[in-house]
Structures are given as structure tokens and as C-alpha cells.
Length: 93
Image 1 (cartoon, rainbow, N blue to C red):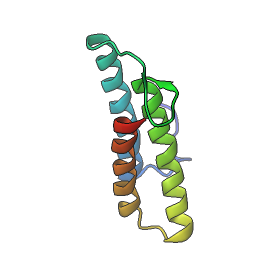
Image 2 (image 1 turned 120 degrees about the vertical axis):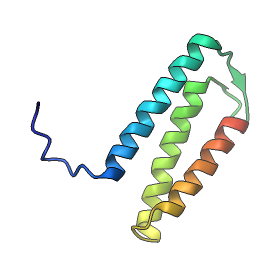
Image 3 (image 1 turned 135 degrees about the vertical axis):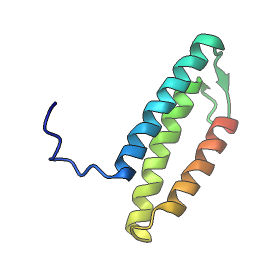
């Protein structure tokens, strides 16, 4: 087993990576069992579920960074705001 002591492995870090891995598995299963079609939303460009997931993750990263810079290290509200942002992206984009 490789030495992973260089990274601060906490339960939050593990939860983050488990969440990303779960999202990728879910998106793969959805692509297999329910093939997707592109749709045009608020951005006026054709997007797939994978595109919307990427936009959601990128926006969530910016929300968390802005929260850290403007509010502080308590990120639970930023996570809730990011979840709301992801729901809006999947519905409207």
C-alpha cells in the first residue's frame, strides 16, 4: 500500500471523494440504462447530463472558495448553497 500520509485524510476528505465517485457511478449507470439526449437550456447551448454535472461541480468549487474568502471556514452553508445551485443547473441549463 502506498504511503498516503502526505495528505490530510479526514472524514470530510473521504466524504468528498466518496461523493464524487458516487456521482460518477450514478452518471455512468444513467447513461447505460437511460441514454441521454442533448437539450438547450438557459445557456442556449446543447448540454448533456455530464455537461451539467461538470458545470455544477465547477460552480460549487467557486461558491466554496468565495465562501472561504468572504465568510470563513464554516462551509456547511456553502455546501447547501452549492446543492441548490446544482439543482438549478440540472433544471435550467
